[in-house]
Length: 333
Image (cartoon, rainbow, N blue to C red; front, side, top):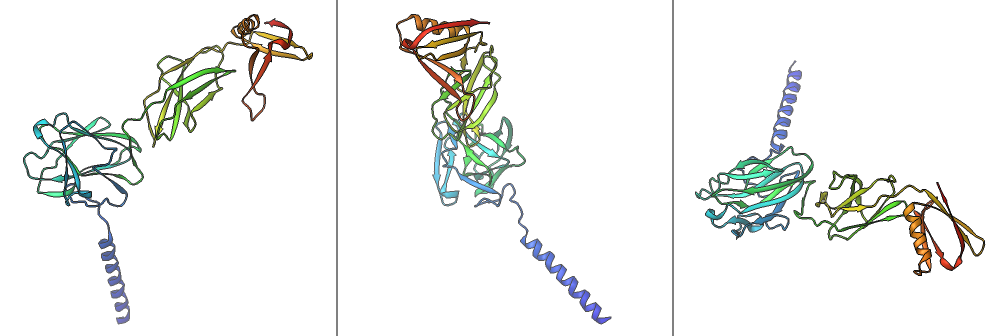
């Protein structure tokens, strides 16, 4: 009996110790108002001097102090001239924290206004003096690109750092849009655009209506061109392209309207001097272009572009020399 009691006692003792060790090792998340010199697990930190954080207005100062993260923090210099001063940044992720200084000075903002994707909330940086303070936190955001704007009325704004989830990233606020060009090529539409510095890819969009709405027909294109073969003859298409940088998109480029590709309604038969016969299915406008070329004294050759019947080629171009044509025949249908 005594032996069983001893065994039970030590079992309970070990169980109690395990609970104590588990509780002492448990990491509790920081709370609003707590000093947070480093980002916690699952977070990453961006200093206030990061170039992807925008400070608008001309009332900003940068204070150097060992109490700040990386020894710097941004401040509104004149609280009476803060109405047009804002902090703005864009990030992709699911959560965000605002790290600031805190002070009992009356000019400190107890009504800091933060807007995330247009939804406003308030937080305070007023209180007992403390550096690197967790002043605001937002969790549970959709994992997408978010736009954050911080402002105040009649008070100072402070920013020491921004924390976001460890898988997220900051994104440039202004991404340059490409300049789009296009032309009809054979039975498709060939689109080209200029390179944008820092672009990770481009999204190609089209619509059947001027000004959209546009459907994405190709995403994250890594070249500066795209050939749209999936078109219906007799329809007009409107195209735009956007720049993609770290998951964020620029505004739409200029819109390119490409003319209707008509249904073929004639077959042109060419008899060449070597007794070779060539046939091309043409639209009325293409046939007229050939006739005009043949009757004029312009270039000595004419190019017929046809879709290639087999890979890896997309198109075949036949260069027909005018002096090699004996006669031609048009079959209309």
